[in-house]
Length: 223
Image (cartoon, rainbow, N blue to C red; front, side, top):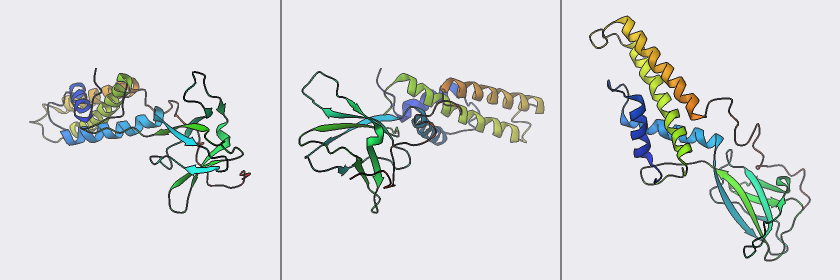
């Protein structure tokens, strides 16, 4: 099954909410999907690999161009990496590597005590946010897509419930009792979809209580 892009995700959302009264529109559905993708990134971010090649003297290197200050963090660092070997490269402590913000708003990789040997490679596994559009998506699993769809559907259902409950048009909605009943049904379904998404508050964030890979301090630098 091909990865679903923005339109396909929004189509799936519309099948879940069945908004016959058009309390929400396509633009709102697309924006709800994008917000859900942002939320998914907090729990299951995209993981990328940045390769650094040493020269025997340098211990500061350019950070990946897509490093996102305030979001990205290092998951692990492998060194030395032999791309021609079947053996798994050893993992070095995350504390050995710092990502430092520079005065020009760029980021640098700083090895605290290690100086990568000439020709030796280090692989830095780091996270970035997912993204989705009508042309591309970074969501690779059905589980991630479903989480996004359920979370976005829940958001739309809450909007629908609010509009039902605020309606004063008795011809549009048969009675006050019916209006309250429909609003409650939407909210109940929204809660169910939030639970299905796996993205509710209280679920384990990808980075735990802190964001460990970004530092602007010099207190622990040894070179």
